[in-house]
Image (cartoon, rainbow, N blue to C red; front, top):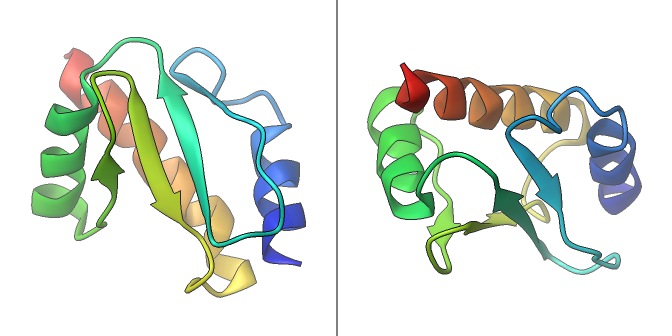
Length: 90
């Protein structure tokens, strides 16, 4: 159910100017491909400003563990990641 909710939120298109997602299944993790900011800089910013932990895989890819989230918090997570991208572009 979590994987389906993640796909539903990301398929909305509202984040497409900052990131898109790589195909994933109902596993535990998924990755975003960032379009405008460095993944490590975003990882640090999300942790410092929002208390959100992610993993930078390389310069463009940010790994998200969704298996530990409540379904109702999934959209909030991607809103925070999106805002973090916008913060870094200021």
